[in-house]
Length: 96
Image (cartoon, rainbow, N blue to C red; front, top):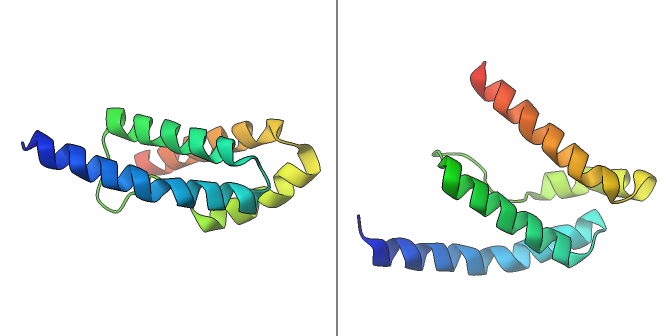
């Protein structure tokens, strides 16, 4: 294991994730801080749980577009519930 290379790779990915998180939060119609906090939480969970090849562990444009209507109709409080439900469904699909 090369700790220096791992730390540099993590720093580069984190810096690349910042504009993406801000852009997708604007698309979803929420405060950019929400996108930054969510990206940090996703990165922390993936670091603890361990990633897999081909696994998307960041925000995507498709999810941001789907959340626009939810946030407009029901407000920001339903965004967390929808995100958790999406994660649960992905875990269940992974077990099948």
